[in-house]
Length: 303
Image (cartoon, rainbow, N blue to C red; front, side, top):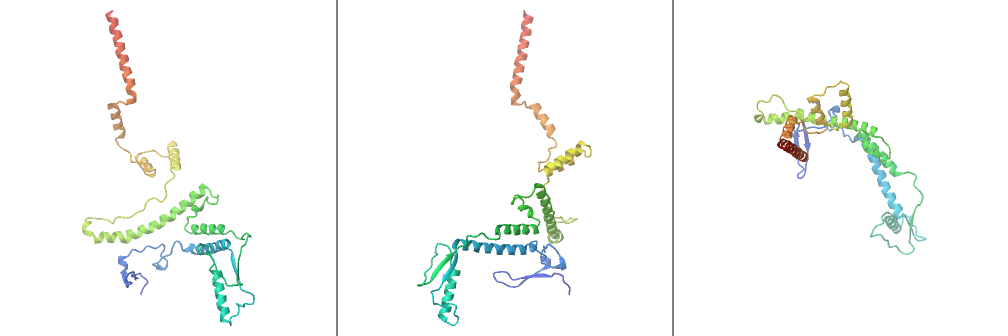
């Protein structure tokens, strides 16, 4: 036997019957193929430890806030009642009831308690400052979780630290990682899904010479200002000669519309046919002046 993946077995709802799906009907996406493990490895695997401690600290923080607001409950039994005596069933029941009361004490709309005579309930509060800043600890774990997926640039500036240059470098690294995962997805489609789809529907693809390929677009937009500065300097020093292909490429990067080939000719023709409204008054004034000059000349000849 070998370790090749042959099928996937699952028991889905609602019948929970065992269903086997062969590998030739599956698309397997995984981040890595170490030891040919079909499960791969989650990109969040390294974040688990930080997430676990963050979750526990948040729970403890919530409990501490509730206790600080409600107070630390202390229930005192009447003098002479030994609730710690395990051999007395009544004392065992009293101890269990007292423990249930202090553990279930909450501040809400239904708060309140009824005690027998001589029982005493106190709420102790602490006004001292805690030794640890849980907010800072949780923020540290948030940064480490983001760091495991190269997304720690999202926390820059939250603590009034971090520069634009550092953020730009980190976003480029994050885009590179995302591009690698997109390449994995495209590779599965190009190797398995698209060829199988074309072969199954071969009657509709007569004469096809090669399979189409799925590719992903750019992850990050280019810095237009830096690109314009680079192109301007290279053109001014003669290192690059601008042409139609360069203009088309720059328009595509800047998300500008395509160039109209006959725009210059069409614009010149329209200007020769239609006079702008803002120049119409000047043209009328010129016509009136020409008419007045011609009238003066005619009047001089007649005299």
